[in-house]
Image 1 (spheres, rainbow, N blue to C red):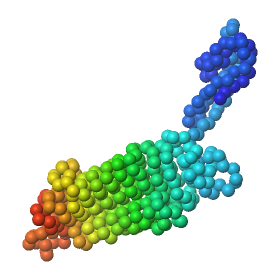
Image 2 (cartoon, helix red, strand yellow; image 1 turned 90 degrees about the vertical axis):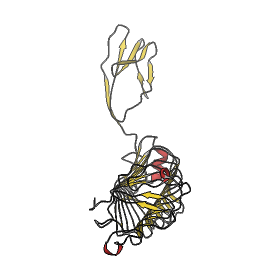
Image 3 (cartoon, rainbow, N blue to C red; image 1 turned 45 degrees about the vertical axis):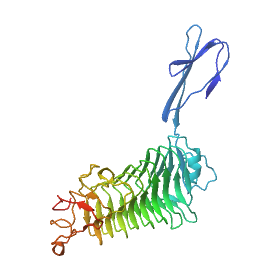
Image 4 (cartoon, rainbow, N blue to C red; image 1 turned 60 degrees about the vertical axis):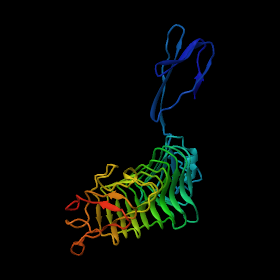
Length: 369
């Protein structure tokens, strides 16, 4: 709010525009919305004869974002960069929708609910820690559209069950984080199409990422290692899984069950028990199958499927799974049922056991992509 005194029978001009018309009052006020960044303010008055006063000027810096620093022990907290809050929860409560909570390096032992569209920005995943020690359930729950989480280590400390959880929200971005040590899932979502990119998701007791009914979105350029399952796709989920390192998971790299239809391409799927496991599907047919290359989903394949101790791709359904244009660890292609060359090649298995089941794997790549 801008206000002041003026001569009677004069008007007020703000940055060259009349904002208070000529009137007899000697007091004035005007609601002015600051823009983010630098605001140059110039106020003049003009009398009935057109004579204009000298300008009163000001430069106002406006930052609508909210700041948090666990190290602020001053006792003064208002969320500004000078006097930041010392908990992330305070920042979330205070920040306007569409703006950012900017979190300084440090450790924050708190459980969070994000209930407005904001950016939660840490100083870096190697230096900014959200720690779940002593808490149960979800460490971070998203309850709004248009949420970004970036720049944190989100550590359940073997206490919380899920690192990040959301259901039925749009425009969710989770990027450049470490998400680890949860008793169930690193990320668990459904009925949403997030972008999950450039994260290190590791050491979660069940799945690195759990995609339930209605889950879609893009899972790209992540390291998903040392979980029981790297990614589990369930229900009618339909995510795009591309350019990830999905390795050293004790059970399965990518597990597909029910009528899940992930599109799987350009991934490194190494040193799991099963690389990709397709379990029973509730709806059978070409249009509801996972696509590992050359299928109806449009996957170009080019996955590196090697070193998986049981099978590279295992089809436990009575229908055909497409897994063309992939590298299986040997120029001769994968091992497969009734292949007379299984003992002479060092590749992973393309395995099926159910009556009528099959894996289409030809052509394969003759060298690693």
